[in-house]
Image (cartoon, rainbow, N blue to C red; front, top):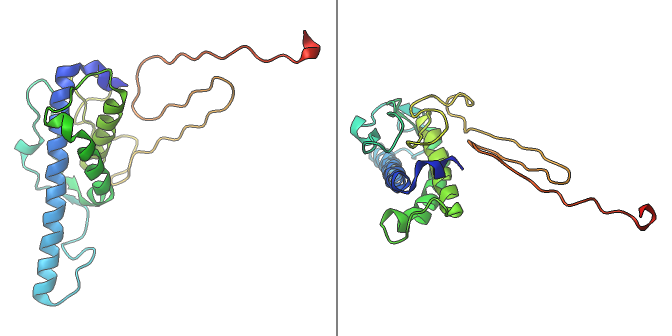
Length: 196
């Protein structure tokens, strides 16, 4: 996984940055829903999709909110706004992933690049944030597209999708942004007693 290449210090700072982004986005979503419900109550209508102007990109992200501490990302995020539809789609995943990362973000659990479950959780959170922001978010030292580059494999508002089909002895399927080497070892084929 490319996150391991970033090193423990950058990974720890990356977790803090991703966690802060996710919680800010969840707060933004809650505030949007509260505002929509308050407006609907005030004018006597039922709250519903589109009452707040409809989902879609909202360009009011504070530039400071998109800045990671020096040396954490390999570039800068571009303020393209927040895709509110993507935020709605990813909200439950953001809640789940920030819950799993809370102990690491607070410093209660050690951050190591050997913890594969941690790396997978951080990568899943990063992918959700990339979907919402419509751009890559890469930690310093990773071998993947530069932070701020658009998601080339997805139309605006569409989640990146990877499909992998594998079959046969020793087959390996890999999805997402992966770099490195995969080695498989297939056991010797079984021989029938008649072939010996």
